[in-house]
Image (cartoon, rainbow, N blue to C red; front, side, top):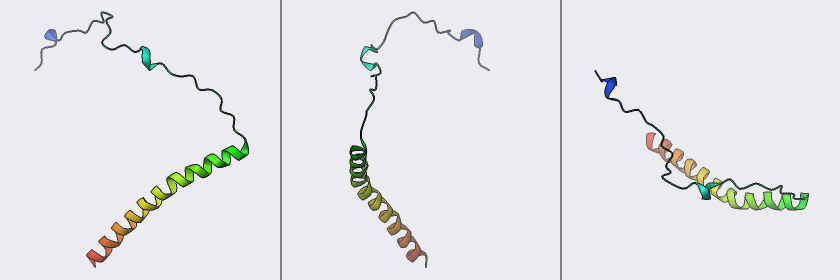
Length: 72
């Protein structure tokens, strides 16, 4: 059985181990885009993420087919 009398209670003495000055939150400004710019942003996102999604889905499909043919 542990003795609770020997437990040291933490007392905050106020000293800093690491300076947190550089970790301030930056204020986010309002980003105003028109419809043409918004469509360009969405198109660019699809051009980046769609190939990655296709590669991942084809990998899963290949794994499922290999397991199917291996077990039959």
